[in-house]
Image (cartoon, rainbow, N blue to C red; front, side, top):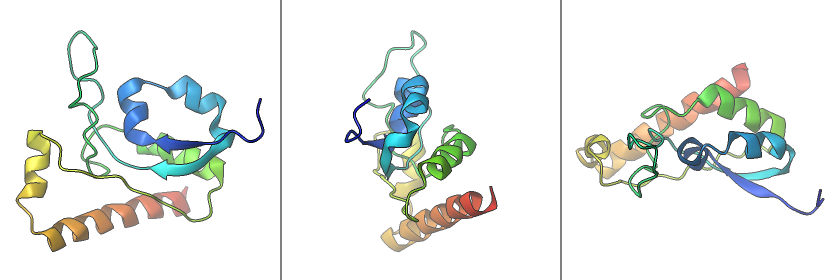
Length: 122
């Protein structure tokens, strides 16, 4: 109930840590974004591994980007989309490593524009 409390909505963290209820309860406090993708918790026993937070480009994992869009629209951010990427130690990131830096940036831009279009169209 603190009016001054705000948070950064990290799509990859939500997918790994299953923080949906927390984000839903406080979605009016979202003031920043870290948009990235992953496959959630992959261990059969549902324990989190340091490799689960993969920071993939959007649409390369299983983050529910329809949900992400609804939260971004609810937060009413000022046309800000902040992406957080890295090359994780995972075979899914191997396809990024095979690209030149310019090709990787072009792919990231394409994904950013796709996500922006989803926001506008929803």
